[in-house]
Length: 115
Image 1 (cartoon, helix red, strand yellow):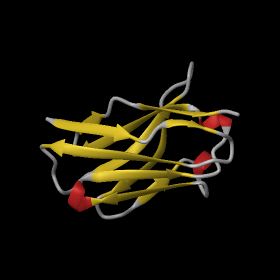
Image 2: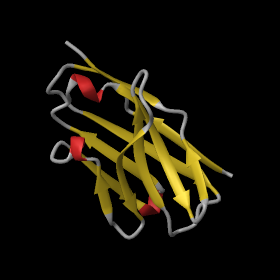
Image 3: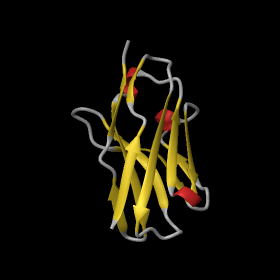
Image 4: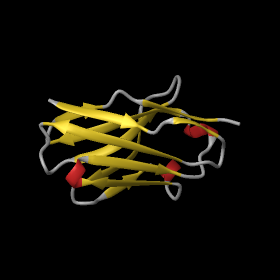
């Protein structure tokens, strides 16, 4: 069993910044991929950014240059630094952990970008 606990969401004005954190605990293998997905109202869940335990990173085109994903392998924690936020970034952000064929999700944290 894997538990993912997210933190850092909230309300921010356009152009502002937020930092999300996700700490994983439980049966975690050292080789894995952690990342963030988001789901806006009436839309499907989409990838935001993922990072492997080896440091390979993939971003959605919509966040490139504005968001930065990083991880602390010793703490089994992944971070998402979000800068220059836009109203279209408003969504519930979910932490994700993949190990081989197993996928775990966090409970989600709301990010709202509004003036």
